[in-house]
Image (cartoon, rainbow, N blue to C red; front, side, top):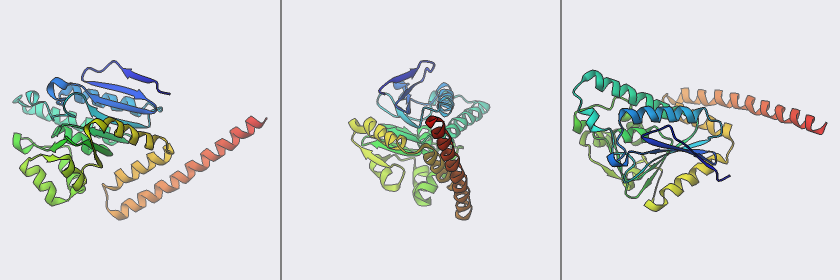
Length: 262
């Protein structure tokens, strides 16, 4: 079915659902989709909606206008109130954890600026497709703030200590090609092919067995948090759990087949 549905309850993003996939489109183009309190709360709500929708098997993050997201809204960050800053950090952490812990694979489709807070979002996604004009940077140190939600740890594990030091301490942007070279991006495509490529990737995932996809996402994500021995134990336990699930599904099919025959 080519049917597309759109949720109308969000003010800073567009949530679309079609063909087993969802799209969260950041939609503050006049501010280059900068993250403010409302957008963070709406991303959290949209992720929760997607997680409970059994028809959705993959999520694509993208941005409207000239950029994926220019980072945190500096108008909010200029508020010289320490409790406000702490609340903003907690809000960001809740949003990012919602993305991180989605059982559905998450694809980021990045064009234009992907700075700081947006960089954090991408780091919590599972697959990143970037257009040739995409630019990545973490500028926390430039503005005298601190990530606080795990960005430095994720990047270090992805690209190694030396490159992570360069990215975070210089705050200098890198191109999509460089991001792909060091392992922050899966694929770089022409600007006009970005949406199509992300959807094709989502469809490749959706056509596979859902229980297998969900289990594989879990062991890869969680395995990165622990040492190899613990990760191997975790994968073995998930294998045993999966075999039991397959047996249950097979018994259910046989039972249904028997009823059909009658």
